[in-house]
Length: 469
Image (cartoon, helix red, strand yellow):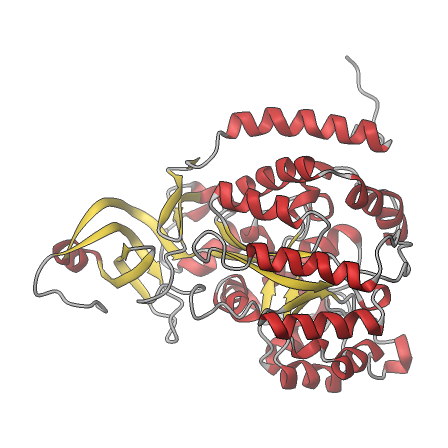
């Protein structure tokens, strides 16, 4: 047991006991009949349940003998404002149609209040599935996203979208570089460190083809001045692009200082070995969104370099992206895709696998976000972000907890979530949200969705097949 002292019974705010505890410490120890003690939002002890029950007088004890206690899951690429757009781009065609006809008008058309309602519902679903932390993908309503995160109790990083080139998606550029950097700076100064450090903020570079050198240089300078990181989309190429040579966007970003942020980039396609070496050299974090790629046919699994990035030691996290382009916000399902899809693409039955996928959703995700000193594992001194998964369901049988990480990734879903703790606060208790009224969110989300679709001229979601009343 690791603790400050067990000579006298110490006080604690919370003691969580479970049949197995996946610590994700450097040794990746799994404790049978383990427990974690929490005080002041931090973990103060990790050890055997019986020992910690004797060592601590906890204000509350949560004891789930059939539970698997893990670090909270980290979603490394999240567009929470798109929750109310779920179903909008189902089977509508290529990426240019999905983004140009739907996503861009939506992003530029919703209001602060609409984005807040969407984000609050988005975070409710994430929490109910065991996600305790998110990295925003960058949007035009960072204040709404941050406030929704504060109100629901989730941990996260927000960023204001910056883009000054119309690019392939024909973005309606309305602001110059100074205005864009000013808006992004406002978001960083307002939200970085908010909610007692539970909310952080970064700068965003949308994607290489929609940001000028001038904007990149300005973002890099301001991020350095405010000591925060950078995030963005990357959308890598196929092996046939550039004759199988280096990706020019990697070289360009490196020359402009974007890769030295610290920087996290999502949607990594194929990379030349020299580009992978550049990621390693600059300490770039990567985020893999397999559900988004498979839903939209982006090819990030078929020709992407995720296994090579992992092998090279790049911290690679996982993301569900947006509800409209992934269709679900369940990182347990995302872990399954990450664990298995590359095996089929490479005809390699050992590619990635359950345990690496779980690392990607916890400690590796924290490393990608440069937050691994505080989250990503259950260790003394870290913030208390934890999930208890209930293993009594038939999908966990036979011999639940015999191989708990493989059972979680290969056979379960986030619906097994029993308890969620963020920063020491219980935000999901026996499967129920404690910070918000789930039924009220459903009613409000439905009303706002109808209003947004009507105002922006989108067709309402309906089946492809005829419906008989």
